[in-house]
Amino acid sequence: MENIDITTNINGIQLSSCIMNASGAICRTDIELSNLLNSSSGAIVTKSCTKHPRKGNSYPRYFEWNIGSINSMGLPNYGIDFYLDFLERKKITKPVLISIAGRSIDEISFIIQKSNFCSKISALEINLSCPNLIENKNQGIVGYDFCVVSHFLEKIFRFHEKPIGLKLPPYFRDIHIENMSLILNKFPISFITCINSIPNGIFIDVNKESTVIRPNKGFGGIGGSIIKPFALANVFKFYSFLRKEISIIGCGGIQSGKDMFEYILCGASAVQIGTQLIKEGISVFDRLNQEFSSLLRKKKYSSIDDFKGKLQNIL
Ligand code: DHB
Image: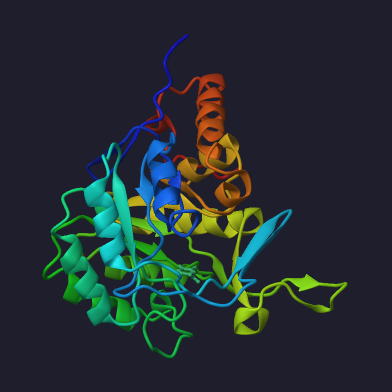
């Protein structure tokens, strides 16, 4: 049987499979990251890390139901030094993306500069979409404040050494994606990852007549299959507005090889798995690699370049 090529390239970074974990999904501890290294994912992404360790919010802070998930984790992580030390100790066999968050431009700049010394990091995924990142008027989600994003990129591209990608929040208007693309196109960005969870949802337990998570009055970021149509739309729109040199990693509600295919049809070069990885565990990568390869074989495609970004409008 003809070999199906599911490798990909994120702006020069070669991946043996176009599937990886989403930041935040079982990628915080030594064991979780070791399991990811040993899995059949094409790359690994760490939990967003800060300058100092953080315990995160009170429990329960994550909940999932049949078609979605809600979280208000509060950035629990062991701090950048833990992740750098982990990489120094481990044999690294696939690209490693360090996700970076922080409450200020200075904190993020500090972490970027520290990461420059670690040869085992392939790229940085800077999280512009987590709540509590930088004090601003848009609920703390930096990606919603275009002036702050512009100022931030001006600063970090003065001293970066590693390839830099940005994890973006979902946008719901064309003009927002167009304007964000105009900013991003001015900088040597390697990739964007879209989308982060849809902010400010609630899920209700009717028996208890209460929310299902405790922090933030029960409000949290929504993930899982219910967000997939919004995520696909963001990938497709960004693909049409961004310079072709900026790769797109799609994220949001992927559960099957068919879902992966949809993202690549919209222009993604790779995909990330969040909620489904938490639900199913590390074997999700084997299953998705197989489902995706089978689908390509059935469609008589031999690699993702045969259909990437080629979504048609129905006639
Ligand atoms: C957290 C949630 C996010 O959506 C994110 O991008 C970063 C951190 C959190 O609550 O830990």
